[in-house]
Image (cartoon, rainbow, N blue to C red; front, side):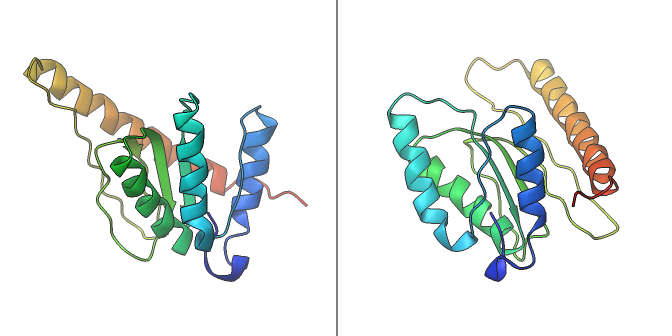
Length: 154
């Protein structure tokens, strides 16, 4: 999802092109059509397409993907990954989101990982799951830094 006026988020196009080169379907939209995209995902999910669904956005698009995850949560649609780049607001990830990697241009990062506690959960296993998720978030942040430093196309 792009941010304001499709001007400041052109990196979303480059990211989608790189993802598509790896054989993964990737589409880019303006944040203003987020509800339409949620409707399309919901329609696919109800038709049997189980994804995985991954939402990525920059600036106002980052805010939009967090709100989209909340809307999909209300409909019972799981979201594998949400990646907001430099959002303008702060949002909590809903329960349907497997992982959030929140990227910012600031000089610091916070990592928070949690497990899905259910009646038959094993506390030791849940703790290890949190540690594993946190490690994956740090690896994703390192990969994002590497990607940001890669030569630009065009």
